[in-house]
Image (cartoon, rainbow, N blue to C red):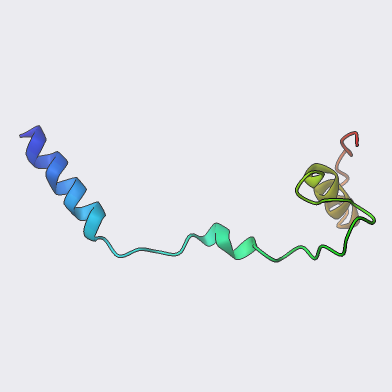
Length: 65
C-alpha cells in the first residue's frame, strides 16, 4: 500500500504544473549603484535593510559593518 502511495505522489509531483516562485519577484528591486553608500548589497545586506527600515520609520538597530 505504501509503495502505491509513493508512486502516486511521485507521479503527481512529476506531472504537476509548475508555478513561478513568488520570491523571484524581488530580484531587481534594489538598485545597486556601486560601492557608495552601502558597498556590495550581497555582502552588507543587513546594513542595507536596516537603512531602508530606518528610512521608513521602522527604527531598526543597525548591525556593525
